[in-house]
Image (tube, rainbow, N blue to C red; front, side, top):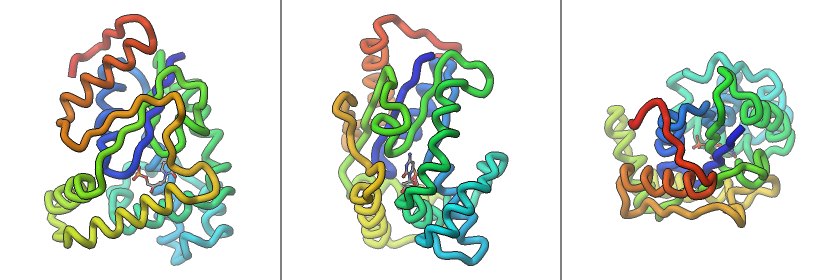
Amino acid sequence: MTVIAIDGPAASGKGTLARRLAVHLGFAFLDTGLLYRAVGLAVLRTGGDPSDPVAAARAAHGLDLGSLDDPALRDEATAAAASQVAAIPDVRAALLDLQRRFAKTPPRGEPGAVLDGRDIGTVVCPDAEVKLFITADLPTRARRRWRELAAKGEAADLSAVQAEMAARDRRDAERGVAPLTRAADAILLDTTNSDIEAVFKAALRAVEEKIGRSLGGPSTA
Ligand code: DC
């Protein structure tokens, strides 16, 4: 079982990269941010406070994996709630087993798994064969998110998007449990000035070097 752990801050490009690597290699893919988003959204929908440990832990234990395609999971309000519930140790503990099981036993018997998040290489899968840390500077990431919002027809103020992203970065990096940090053995890829094609190629090279064999996949996409 080959596990590829991809971590990094919001809008660094890690999700696009992770999905693409998984398709190319024929591996299973888990966007672990969606789990925290689902917990945050469940708390918001019951009118609760995402920073309330009791409400958040209850939502985490009742997490419905069948509801991970709800478009509201992509909302900015959900992202902020996700970052709040993610700082609560009980929430992280409730989601840990699920993520590890996915990595160890991919759902459709795939030969490997790609997981992306904030603590995959450090906490969830510290023994992953390949660890990548994807980053980009804050203004670049804020602009990407702002463009995504505009494409969805959600006009937003760029400086407000950047301020919200900076607050989320801080919460994710400064929390006491499983903070966003680069694992000592993670390969750093900075996407500030690279397009997705260049990042994908660099990541694939790193994967091949680490695993020590050429990994062909069912698709070259
Ligand atoms: O990757 P994302 O933007 O969908 O993540 C949403 C929030 O969830 C993020 O602000 C922090 C949290 N998260 C986490 O703490 N650990 C993970 N492995 C993934 C996400």
